[in-house]
Image (cartoon, rainbow, N blue to C red):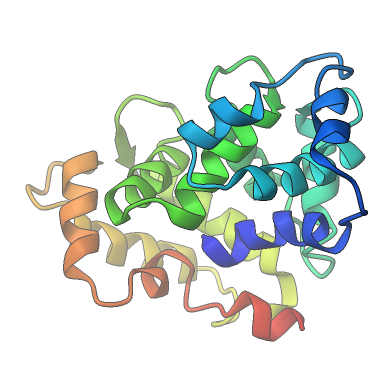
Length: 219
């Protein structure tokens, strides 16, 4: 997930104008949906105040209103996967960031999620990923949900997907996922089963992201 979400912050690092703290604090009072103060966000995340300022500039540049709706999020995300259809995966990712389920992502939502994905503990990252895969939010990952996630990843990668998509490939990945994760063989994966199994796997991303090296293929 780090490689995927890293693309979301790439623009913020490239657009770093020469401005001071006062400018940033002033901007943060002018948007329609004012985010938490920098000091509070610094305390709640693993980012420094300077890093939050940079992230906020990029966020506001893409979303002047201070919030991102799903269509805007999909449009931004699709730019990083021009050879595939990222809309469905972006939909699931948007829902994971939209922790209040109100159909929009505020700056606080964005940086709280990003903080976990980039600098959280292993357990925090796995919990976040579990909630991404738990599409219906019932506390379990079932086969239907995992199949939708796998297909969304294949659609997103397009021609860069390896192995190439064939009729039974998504199901093979889902079967491998449940063989490893579903310890009690009840047909669903709980959060604890997910975390324990992931901690036993030496390279977790090979299972979750279909052995796709996103950055090498795109660059």
